[in-house]
Image (cartoon, rainbow, N blue to C red):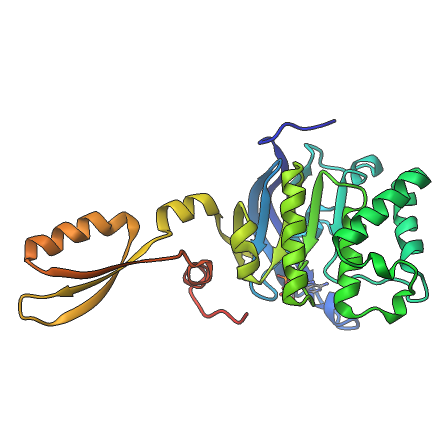
Length: 304
Ligand SMILES: Nc1ncnc2c1ncn2[C@@H]1O[C@H](COP(=O)(O)OP(=O)(O)OP(=O)(O)O)[C@@H](O)[C@H]1O
């Protein structure tokens, strides 16, 4: 059943995942728990590009895997397409690029793609056309007859992307889609995401590369140490915070200084300066920096 644009397609309520120590180091007994994610809630609307950003270990993959039903939460609930338990027919409406993918190296690219098409019950002719379309878009159609053993890391990442979009999903989940890609290929993924969004696909992707989400993310959830810090709407951010003003003023005693003022505080600042009799020498606009905002938001340093 098609859902209307703007309706909620993913709902996450008070999600908590705790990993046992022994999950990491098998053999260590005992009930010591390590936090994965804690009390995370958000909604994703149909047709939006929603991104989770966070440092390594913040909890991005755990959140995505819970949504997909690949791990069970310790607390909280998740629904996709309004359902808490997804059936196999629901998975036909979903595409997923895992953080790490494994493919049989001796397989040829075309056979791998045919295998995925068969999983989605795609008729052979349609499968061929769709495979050509997707591989061409990703720039690897020329390798269709090659075995995967000769593929570089970045090319295997593109294969992962190809299988994720082959069924033209309604929701596309991408876990670190830019991982291992050169700048040109990254741009290719950005274009792919934009193209999917233009066709009405909901895109949910995890990343720690802020530059990649700044352009394409409609809403961005910042998570840090397992907790949701905030969900920011990029359009609001650009409108409210896009411009910082560099103001050089000459004070009464002739000294100069530079001040940085957010757009929303600019008028008050100008009024204050004029009242004081300061002279404004220079006003400069500065782009909103997601990176700066992110660092401020998690209250620390970023290690991108
Ligand atoms: N199977 C596991 N067993 C124990 N701890 C785990 C397991 N998987 C994840 N964790 C821990 O849960 C926390 C969140 O991990 P998660 O993989 O969700 O983070 P992430 O944001 O996706 O990280 P990255 O960017 O490095 O992929 C980390 O502290 C991690 O060590």
